[in-house]
Amino acid sequence: MSNVMLANKFASQTLPNRFALAPMTRISAEVNGDPNDLMADHYEAYAKGGFGLIITEGTYTDDKASQGYANQPGMISDSQVAGWQTIVNRVHEAGSKIFVQLMHAGAQFQANRFTDQPLAPSAVVPVGAPLGFYGDQKEWQTPEAMTASDIQVAIDGFSQSAANAKAAGFDGIELHGANGYLLHQFLSTHFNQRDDNYGGSLDNRLRLVVEVVKAVRRAVGPDFAVGIRLSQVTVTDPDYQFPEGQSGFQRIVESVRDAGVDFIHTTDGDVRRTPFIDGDLALADVVAGVEGLDLIVNGGIDETNFHDAAGDYPDALLAVGKKALANPDFVQRLKDGKEIADIHFAMLQPKATIRNELAWRKENAA
Ligand SMILES: Cc1cc2nc3c(=O)[nH]c(=O)nc-3n(C[C@H](O)[C@H](O)[C@H](O)COP(=O)(O)O)c2cc1C
Image (spheres, rainbow, N blue to C red):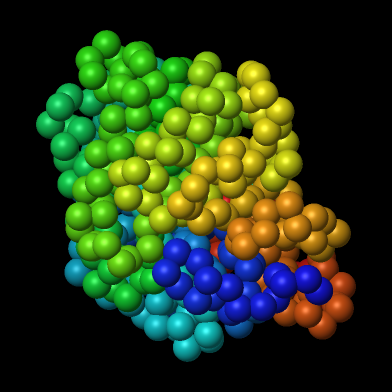
């Protein structure tokens, strides 16, 4: 079974294999953002199911405008850190490593217990409609363009949350720079219409991302694993393309590396999709061609094609989303040659909560 099931060095960690659980929002924390036992059971199941690395759902980073969903977990209070500590311990006891995904929703704001006012690079709403399986909002609210002090609050939120994550015992941090959330919004010419030094040229659009990476690196020190997830597409806009094409994406990758990330996690509809307005590389190919970075690839990996992704990107981790939802023991099933189930989206209805998934499983137990 090639080398996917062998121990693997990744961003200063030794992982039991090359499979990672992709980050998946489950809006199942307490109202105040505390992670709970339901979440601990949930993440432990993936560790017991063989995933070498667990990447958590997007977790909010400040008490201003970072939260995007009701019942989203946070990383900003003592009780949130304590809740995560329990989850980290359970995952470690099961033999896996765990990174937290730190996320600021920006304009992709559906619910926030601290404010009714989304903040984003500019007063621009996302393409499409809010996500029904995360909340009942029918329309996006128009965000306010962030001031210099709003930007500083966001940077400080990321760095303090990174320090909190380290204190909670996490093995690393993934910054959410993909799928249309705040860091991606600054990179995107759809969301970012600013005419100050955070908007316009690619270097200006990169400024916030670079400042966040540097601040996080300072907060956690040189030896802690820090990476960033990057995409072109957003959760509601599968067609967005960076105007600077492939070389622009390479510049983003090199800039975050120089600012201090150890790894990049690319996500697209399919690992091998060639999404740029020019060139014929996949996102992951661009990262693989840049020195000094570890790589996680994501998009459509399943039991039929994981060998291809593993061969195309030797040493990369393979992050699995929907197939993992359908099979929390996906990795163990591969090892044992057992059948792998397909995803049934009914398990995420009417909301993508862990409780709804468990109820669906009970009803549909073979
Ligand atoms: C229910 C659900 C929640 C998700 N939440 C997140 C999230 O919090 N952060 C993130 O970066 N991606 C999130 N994603 C995207 C997945 O991480 C992954 O990129 C996507 O499902 C494609 O990978 P797959 O083809 O293996 O499913 C979510 C996907 C699903 C299905």
